[in-house]
Length: 515
Image (cartoon, rainbow, N blue to C red; front, side, top):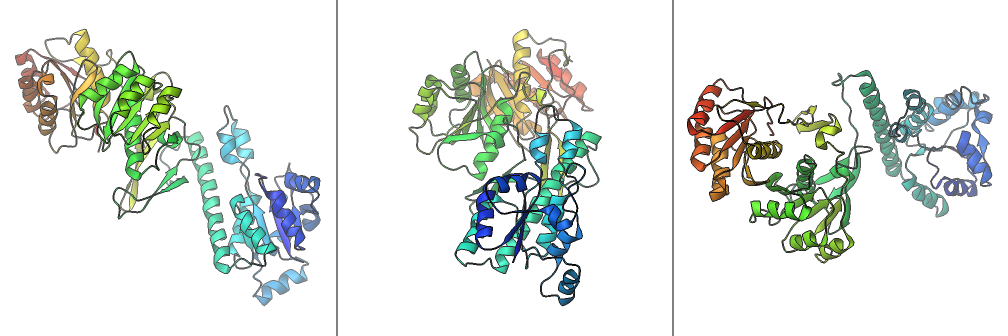
């Protein structure tokens, strides 16, 4: 008689699988809660203690760590010495292992979880059994995912045995699973101990979906999410309508979400190729949308729009007049959703917004960038500045309205690819210069885009001015106030140019490079 070992935390489908095993004269051995569940379901089941000759001890910490278990898992059937050894010791081979692990992830995601509770939910015996069975995959069918139960049942009921290749696939899934499990434990403990940049970094992500292709049709791609990703992230967004998301859609939507979450007042962001083409804030979401649209009515076509308030019918109607790829918002009125769903391909998504205080309230999550042969990791740029933190460096002080627009533009320029310049007035962007090789070049693009609206606008620069040419270009365009980090060895030249023109300039002492 063959033997199957079952020990699962997630009981989904396990009774049906056990019943199939028993139907085909396979002895089922089980532990703890799984044993109790199978007994209650009327499944003949042997307690693990009857195999090991020892009771479960230490509140279940030790129950499967025994030669009678691991000998039965690791014995290679084609190896005579292995089989002779276990036969001489009275160890019976184990042919099926169905195991999933203590819910460590679910435990640490609980509100107010204690360290002791987290530690107690680190599985020891489960990974050991899984790894042993997976190592001996040619002889042992090992299953860690309930979605694979159907294939085991089919193999039994239809005399359709698992192939060696299928067993290897199941074993490979096991090692991915245990690696991810250990990575979560490592990340949790590193956070507890304050090891911000440990000597070894192991990250784990869960596959969300395959994508049709990457940035271009010749590139394969998929989307993965962090385990337990926060609801306010793009991984936490829920699609209500429209065709499947693409690689570029997700990347752009992430950029839009990052900007709109900078604001606590009603705000709308339009994105094209991860750069904002229009940002507006106002007292209502409709007014904020109109400001974002009017900032660049050409570039918003085919773009992505993120809003930080519920979308009402009027706003939905205006947006429906355009071709947009995605709309992201925390919610939609019933009328708004009905309007937007008339556009077959428009992707309509909901996503939670950040708590009161905006992105700065989220702490310091990390961002990563894959480079050839390695990985860059850093804190997310969640830094914001207030009026009290900036320093006026010119003779003329900004007016209250100029200060408001400067702080607005500063929030936006942080999310524009460097070198970056943003012009703003009346609570909206009017010109964006992104990703240029020199700063004055970015300024000229923003000024040209703004046109007549540059007159009376403010200018934000993501980094300091290496010389006075950007200030001079701003003055010539009619800019009345500037915000920049400061810190150049030629700051005095820029300040002198601003003073000569009678405009205001403030320093933040914070740089926002975005490459």
